[in-house]
Length: 279
Ligand code: CAA
Ligand code: NAD
Image (cartoon, rainbow, N blue to C red; front, side, top):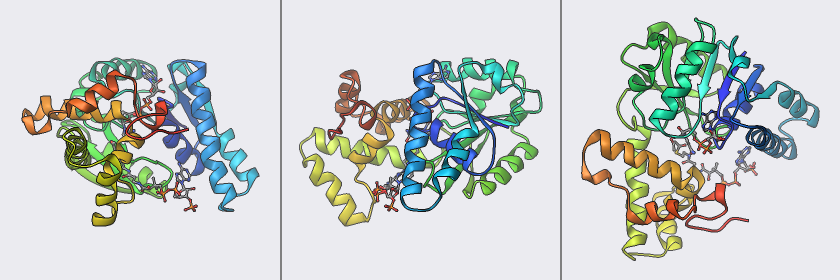
């Protein structure tokens, strides 16, 4: 049995992929509304696969049935592996990892889907740093092949091998990188997104122009501003603040426009408005 903590943008996709590959899953969030939203997102995603005749409605229903939603960490006690996908905040992650360390069976692996935070620092909140690892899925989880696997200072070879095996079982491609703020994915991606926001902030181009340049010019499937809306502007800001603080270089300072949009509650797709408006 596998566990997922956080049923938001990433967590529900991770739970869905686990269930699509035959695993029973416990999907946890802070309240019933949050887990209900997570389940609805899974059903919507599977509906796309049914519509494309990639699976039958019965197969989709069987997948949904494998996902048990809960608000209690006690339901994760028997999990062989739990992926944490909650807010990109060290203190909250450390609090949750401390709770998971107490509730999940001693040989269970505790993985974080964090975009940028030191795995070593998250592991320090537990008594099992050898079984703590970064298992960094990409958005949208049902489609993106990469899992960036990050070893903390004390992550064991056995834990790493188990995560590689599970990643391949999920039809994903695991790539191991070392523990460093933002790892490879966001150390490279977020400065690009931040520069696109600075281009908008300094009126170098409109949002549409900026995104079109990168889609047509660099064959990106989404422009950087649309991608920021897709990731979540709050997540982008949190990542840039980690890079700025932990790498100590002003080149990672978040664009003031990004900060202002997050302050205003314009978080992108998940709030209905970011650089673009969404129904
Ligand atoms: N579940 C199931 N199917 C989905 C889906 C989902 N969540 N999202 C999209 N699809 C399907 C659609 O149904 C569609 O299917 P068909 O082509 O068979 O009709 C297909 O995927 C394409 O989707 P769309 O038509 O909606 O749009 P698109 O062609 O632009 O593809 C996309 C969407 C796959 C997201 C593509 O735009 C893309 O790859 N964007 C870049 C994503 C990216 O860069 N991800 C990494 C973000 S950074 C990160 O994740 C790390 C971090 O820590 C922040
Ligand atoms: P989100 O805001 O969409 O969802 C976070 C979820 O966590 C919410 O449902 C919230 O209720 C829940 N949560 C918060 N505190 C909790 C707690 N103490 N216990 C249980 N649930 C709690 O965030 P997201 O975009 O899914 O990101 C989650 C994590 O994944 C972050 O660390 C983020 O950096 C990382 N990540 C995000 C993306 C992306 O594109 N959004 C991609 C890869 C990794």
